[in-house]
Image (cartoon, rainbow, N blue to C red; front, side, top):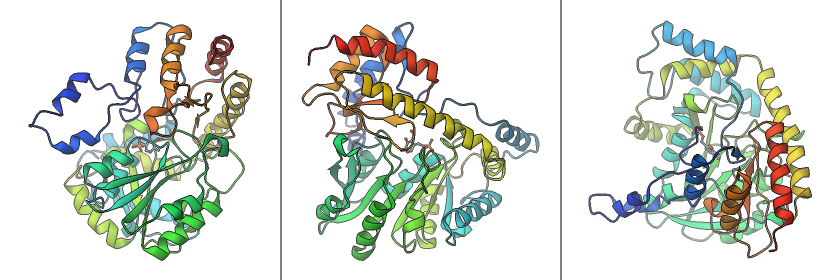
Length: 406
Ligand SMILES: Cc1ncc(COP(=O)(O)O)c(C=O)c1O
């Protein structure tokens, strides 16, 4: 099974020992060894495992995107592009975003990267420095805090709670700001919770941050996987200007093309100029034929995305129901991405439960401590798998949970 290495880490223990070796930069110590390694290693040795642990879409990449990729190769599009990205892709993205959010985004506001991962990498490592504090929600995608810490920045975690559907309280964010606060990292729809922050939350945070000159880094990689009938509250839609925001996204989730590795960062022209220099010294340019495939994605038919979103929404409805039917699990209503992050009773270790559940039922989930410090009793369930598999997984989980005495 192919996995996102950031999501599921199979680093060997000897590698942790290596970090104590003087050969390596101490900054490598900021990269955690994911607590789920044991699970994934174990799952790999087992037969008949159902994975509710996948962090990438399970749909095939739409045909017209594959064709555009192949056509680009056939046409000899195998050299470097301009460092900021293929001009045709920059224009397509600028037109697309300007129309989607009703604000002017020009080519110079965009830098094409190797996925949203590189976009967030550039944004965070180009700004993190000793003495600068970044607010990061907890639980959160694994990438942000290590990148900040590797560069000497300080991370202040803002816990969100299952009983509030992991919504972020803007007042808690405002209260957490102090003299050292340099930026805040947002990710909505969220991995691992599937939570979508409403427009009021985004607006309140943006307003306070603009007032105080604090940067808002927004990972919007799931910006199309919004499963209820709502207008997606993007930072790009609600920010007054681009002065203190950097927004990352990619084609990975929307078009099920994670392996083609095309993402981008949108920011002020001044910020993009700086990030371009950094990008040249990091990956140089993004994959050229994949950028052509990206143009086909943006300009091609929209039904493929609508169909995927419809299917995710059906699965979400079913998973929410199944979680509610499962003894000891408390869920909520996730509105986006393809995750739910239900909790076990307080003080129950999800790490132990996930491991035992995998061993005894063959269902692989991800324990909450892989995503932060505040949710050791939660687990991430991904519904990036078929409804049949989801049903089969819960046919195993529910009777198993009935027998547990927590
Ligand atoms: C929140 C979040 N950001 C970024 C990524 C990586 O995206 P990309 O494939 O565009 O690098 C993922 C992938 O799981 C994710 O969940």
